[in-house]
Image 1 (spheres, helix red, strand yellow):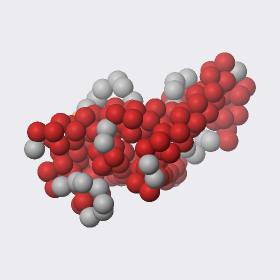
Image 2 (spheres, one colour):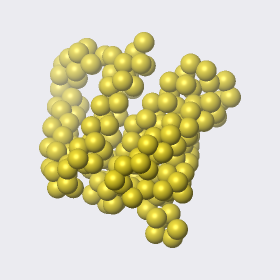
Image 3 (tube, one colour):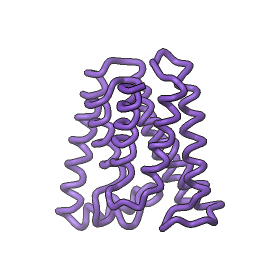
Length: 192
C-alpha cells in the first residue's frame, strides 16, 4: 500500500510539464527554483537536526523510502532534474522527458513489484516493458498537442527512459532519467 501512495505522490510531478505547457519557460523556471530552494533548505535541516528528520519521516512515512532517512530524497533529485531539463532542452523535449520520467518510473515500479518475475539486478523485465509502453502511449498523446513531436522522437524518448530506468546505476533515476531522456531526444531531433 505504501508503494501505491508513493507513486500517487510522484504523479504530482506532472504539474511541472503541465505548467510549462500552459506558460512560458521563465514562469516554470521561477517555480522550480523556488521549489528546489525550499526542498534544499528542508534537506539541510533534515541532515543537521535528527529530531527534525524523524518528524519528517513520521509525517511523510507513506511517501518516503526508508533509505531516504540518510540520503537526499527522490523528490529533491526530481526537482533538480526538472529544473535542469527545462533549462537545457526545448519545450517539447523537456515536457516529454518529464512526463516519461513520472509515468514510466511509476509504471515500472508498480508492474515490476506486482508481476515482475524476470529479474535484472533489482529491476524486472516486466516493469521495464511497462515503462516503455506507458511512455510510448503518453508520447502518442503528446504528439497530438501543440508540441512539435513525432513518432520517431517519442519512440526514442520512450526507449531512452526505459533504458535509464532499467540500468543499475548508482545515480538516482529521478535525476538521471529526465536528463538522459532529454539528451537522447535532443540528439534525435537534431539528426532526424
